[in-house]
Length: 186
Image 1 (cartoon, one colour):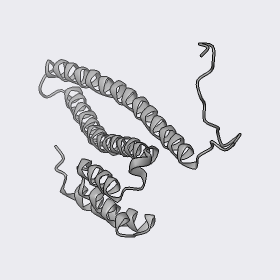
Image 2: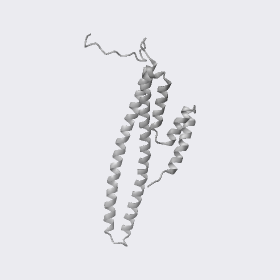
Image 3: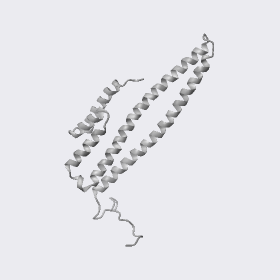
Image 4: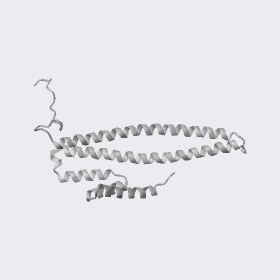
């Protein structure tokens, strides 16, 4: 065989022939979704890293300003104003740090989603597993085992028990609100 022969390329949906497969098209779309989510997560991580570095630098500057204010006379109105402003800024920054914690939850969920989609793509691409109920149950058990939030587990169970997307989202959001109420802010 000639080394210049192009590798076999299955026919795409744009030019279907006898080799065309809706399963292969599905796997390609799943792989695209995984790549897009992964790319978005990486962009988000870079932004959060920049924000974290900025907050750290701002906290250092607040500390320096507070130290300078401490050198002013104790009864100085400027000292009180500076101290009050530093406390207010530190409080706002604490609120932003809590928002970062929710970003972390989002990032975990997207990570689970990319893993789940990749696993689903692997199962669908495998003729031996595609029609195996045991393989599907194993995939579902693996996906559910990765969830750390009760709201995600509840949504998973709801969907597998036949709930509509809207019903499952409603259930998940209700659980999310309960979990948020239980979060201790520090």
